[in-house]
Image (cartoon, rainbow, N blue to C red; front, side):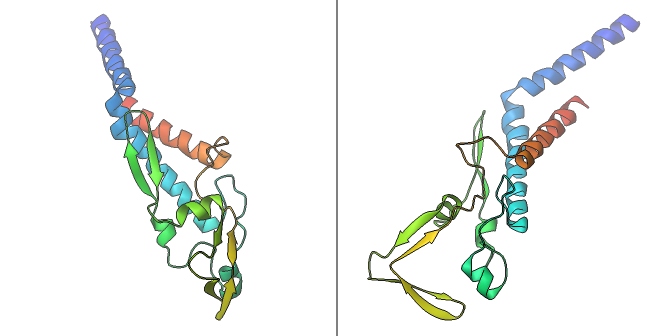
Length: 167
């Protein structure tokens, strides 16, 4: 009788391993969990004002003069990151806001339709021909590995998904 029980256990384990190897597990369980983890890491970065590698963001003029946090005025940017397209092998976290990329990667904004850009700083109107946005990474850079915090969070999410199937 114990031989049958042993075979049943092996069969059950085989079914669990097959589930872990399936594209459905990746698409429906693992990749959404990783996208959720990425969102949590983005929120952590906004809260601590650090990039995915835990390097502090350069403080914005608005935050320095008016108080508050850099890149957090209305909260729209932080809240704009959502799970994008998920395939059988990958998922993405994206923002539809046009200023997400320039703030993430850094940019120089030049006046095009008028001689100057005009904006308020500390309650005063300022005019400049160009404005330089420093790089303030909110998502990991594609040209380097994940930072320790992001890597550990992704590994934990992966482990939790695997444990849920094997349990």
